[in-house]
Length: 198
DNA sequence: AACAGCCACAACCGCCTTAGT
DNA sequence: GACTAAGGCGGTTGTGGCTGT
View 1 (tube, rainbow, N blue to C red):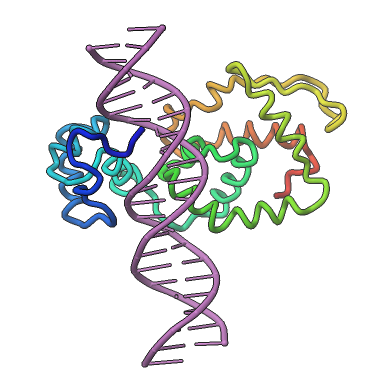
View 2 (cartoon, rainbow, N blue to C red; view 1 turned 180 degrees about the vertical axis):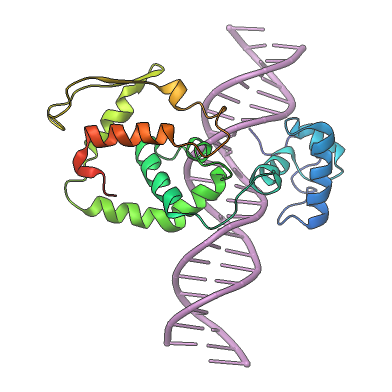
């Protein structure tokens, strides 16, 4: 969609750039009243000369409660690497598995830190892109069917089936639970035992 | 001390999807 | 079903701070 629509303030008259503490305060106050969904309403009622998208971004990335900033742990980093391998640049999905982290933060972290790391890993021979293709090919139609691929593993003796909707449904996860991660890592180890030491 | 280059990150842009009419 | 407004997402850019020369 267009960033800011014709009705209301135009691009030229809108506030842009860094947010001030006063703006943050106004935004937080307005969201308390109107909720963090109706961004058009929030942007107009708050008196901020910002478009709804800008308000949304500011809230989601900085003002939202329970946000973790900085200090991405080794565990989280490893998780990001693995998830990126599995999901690609689906930052919102990846962020959904890291409580308190935002897609923007993860995206930035990836671009500035992990991108190099990942490409370095890929330079090594035997790091298969085939497996990625297989995983992606299998995430179709609401379920993930991971079949026994002799050419890759040869040691798997049964099909593994995930419900991708369940797998990617992050709505119920509040705490830092690793059940799903374990599931993923187990799968990785079964399918690609040679590639578990990222 | 001054400058250049690099890096990290906040914010913006534009496309796509979804919801409402 | 067509149209419009709004939300969501990923890519990109701008800028401030840090580091090396």
